[in-house]
Image (cartoon, rainbow, N blue to C red; front, side):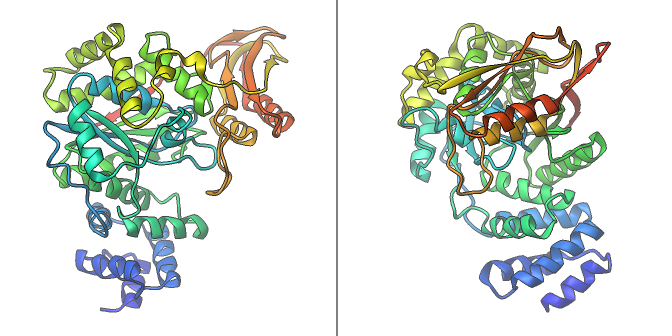
Length: 432
């Protein structure tokens, strides 16, 4: 078997066998398949695509290219959630403690933000002392003890995916649906959960710009998960405006805390309750989606979700006082009101531009080495479908002086107006 033969077969649009993919991917990890050969393979895949069987095999091969997390020592049903990346997406900070507060084991490995999208780890690290680096033994013990842990991905999980993703990023092959699906699912399968819920973002602030492409990705990921004997749900959600109102690390943590207190934005709460309902249903804790949602709503009312978040923060070295007293978080040096220059109904808040504006302020990374400022960002005062008059406050810019004018200019560029409301739908579709 030769690497060139596999590249030519894919270039000619033919289906690769599991053996051929195994040879090629494992060869790339051990160095016998070179970067230039993998680049050719990725470009051929980008143009010719893959069958569902090919994408499934690719995910499984990448999953087993390194350590697979053994969660068998965790007692009970284990769940996980993944978002394809959005702006203002602090869902895990609300969803995980809510679900865990019902006795479902939420064992999650998360990533950092890059570009206009934020990362769960960066948000958690804005809580003083929070440690995202637990050993496998510590991870398992914490989930057994308090039902929840959120940690960073270890370097030994899915090394094939890490190498391939870095190459995709510089060869223009990132937005290939089979490559995205196999990349995401290899990591989720390696993380060892029994049920996985995928939040597939659609719109200006997402990888998938259109609903048909997002649905294709969702169907493929669900298919891969089911073939690996996982309970799977994928929910397509709107990312044509930021989720919630806060964009920026500590700002989003404070909004997550408000949501667990019952005072958060409706769209964020609705999304967390929807995602959580499927996980609670799959765990066997509820007989129906309606019952699961009611159980989660009760955990907001009785503050058990908030208490579970505080337990996780304390267990991972953070100061849980910040969860009960979010006013302890530091503020940016300056908070600037951004006033409306037009009147009408807000018809669009471009998520990509809004995320980029937040990144310019220092809340996100332009590259992997960028140091994040945890306190800067944007808090929206108005959302899509809200009516505004000239001079009304659209948002608050939290800045420490970095690129403030450029961020405000980009903010204005992200806002569109209309003379009538348009119905905004948060949940676009569900795949099971």
